[in-house]
Amino acid sequence: AAGRGAAEALSFPADFQWGCATAAYQIEGAVKEDGRGETVWDVYAHTPGKTTDGGTGDVACDSYHRYQEDIALLKALDVKAYRFSVAWSRIFPSGKGKPNQKGLDYYNRLIDGLLAAGITPHMTLFHWDLPTGLRGGWQSRDTAYAFADYAGFIAGKTSDRVKHIMTVNELRCFTDLAYWNGNKAPGLRLPMDEVNQVRHHGVLAHGLGVQAIRAQAKAGTQVGLADNATIFVPAIETAEHIEATKKAMREENAMFLTAIMEGRYIDSYLSAQGKDAPKVQAGDMEAIGSPLDFLSLNVYTSNTVRAAATPGGYEILPHLANSPRMASPWLYMTPEALYWSIRSVSELWQPKKLYISENGCSADDPVAPDGKVYDADRVTYLRNYITHLHRAVREGYPIDGYFLWSLMDNFEWEDGYTKLFGIHHVDFKTQKRTPKLSADWYRELIRTGRLV
Ligand code: GBH
Image 1 (tube, protein in one colour):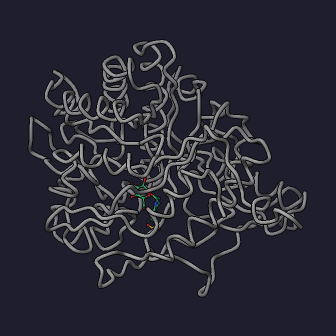
Image 2 (cartoon, helix red, strand yellow):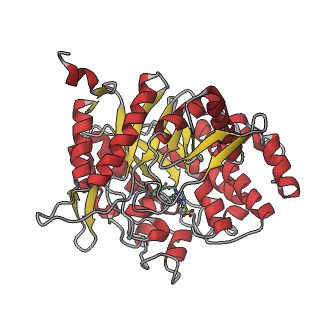
Image 3 (cartoon, protein in one colour):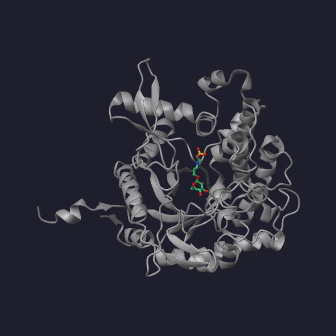
């Protein structure tokens, strides 16, 4: 038929917020500058054997000094929005007490630079770099109160210009992986009752943070969080498997997203934990369930779910040896995760507005003789995922934007610099940033608003 090609291109709304994401410890470097305090990640990365290649965030992408160059990269991509995180220990070097003006100045320069370039800032307040001055870390309930004080303070200082604030990034990563699995800072392996208490302090920090931000931010500031809910995709798109998928989503995320969206710990979680269940004080669940202006999801991978034989039951199917995956062993390529994450949370909890706050992948990034990285695998990954994002947009779910992780290669936590997620290659000797093929591809998507 005539015009077939154009008709089949997947178009996004003109005001769709295409963006890129980063996080402070992964890109800033300058860890001892202008009064920044020590964080659990400084200690962890400097402990021999904790990161694969011995890498640390001491220098990373040196964005603390090169942020203007990074804004220029964003502008060249034509992105509408940028998601960055604030290093708590630049603002309160020991986590609480007297604010550090020089740290605040840095974020003011960054925010003003973004706005001058026509880029909307989306600001995360905690992306895992916990100040070591907070004794006991997330094992201590005091840390949740300290977070709220910091959150309210920074919202008060920046919300004249920053209208999208996320409290925390990925509860599961800074609680379970840090205090149970032990492969993220501070690297502990606590018993389950203590892990549940850490989780509770995490969601409590989020909730008290929302309240503090609302109390101190300018009118019109929108508050949410960036969560990495465990995501499920139905084995077959039939009513019974879809029901099982939603049930899995709600129950497997009971200690994090479900608690936040429902303001309570659901019975299946409490009965499964028994005597290990978290100790909750009066007012906690009300704070945790504070209504949000938006919900942001970090979406990388998922598992398939089928309805199980028992009524209302579900079974999570394991990944298999030959299931396709990207360069990080955990990163199975499951593009439908982007659609089903949005649909499941929408049907379960009806959030007012949604963003994908992270999506992207590690890939083999060969540098070609012409000096460019032709990361065709990353382009394939992104195209597949964004096709399923388009389905969610087309079906009318309230999804306003998408942030690609990441603007540039950076410090990938316990993997050091061995797994890279950037759409810009960074030469860590010279700090030169070079667009990869995926950056060219993303720019084209943004400029045309169409996925072809
Ligand atoms: C996000 O985490 C982070 O927000 C971001 O900082 C990070 O750079 C990016 O993704 C890429 O990883 O082998 O079982 O320990 C992603 C979610 C969940 C990915 C835990 C790594 C470890 C799996 N992460 N997962 S395991």
